[in-house]
Length: 181
Image 1 (cartoon, rainbow, N blue to C red):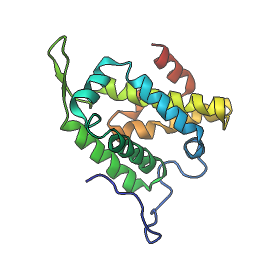
Image 2 (image 1 turned 135 degrees about the vertical axis):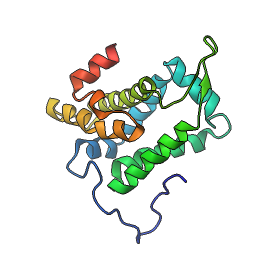
Image 3 (image 1 turned 90 degrees about the horizontal axis):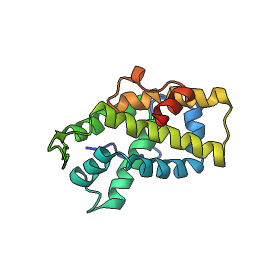
């Protein structure tokens, strides 16, 4: 089952999670501008033909777009603000869901899964890049060091989806180089 949202005051996180209140991640995602960044990232992700085919062929986005968006949003809130055990569980569930999905490239006939590192990296980097850009444009603005710290902190998110965190950008310059590539 997917992680369930906290619904009553009796449920409290066991710790401050992978980021915590002093992180740039919490500051960025607590800002309303992060919603603009997330929406931008979703649009950018659709530029990648294999990503859009996967979503079209292997998700319930056509039958339940609101439910699909809510589940994705809950995943993001869970790994960002949840405790470490809950975030780890969310990553496990996501990777398991991905392992049971596949799409077919209509040009090559190749079957592929969403767990392919290049697809995971694209989705990861577009999200980090777009949230950072939205915060810079609409607030909160971060210093260059904080921007680097945000990108570096997001390596945890990369690991949770199944990437080797050492392969994910660790600085804004590395993120920009990836996006330009």
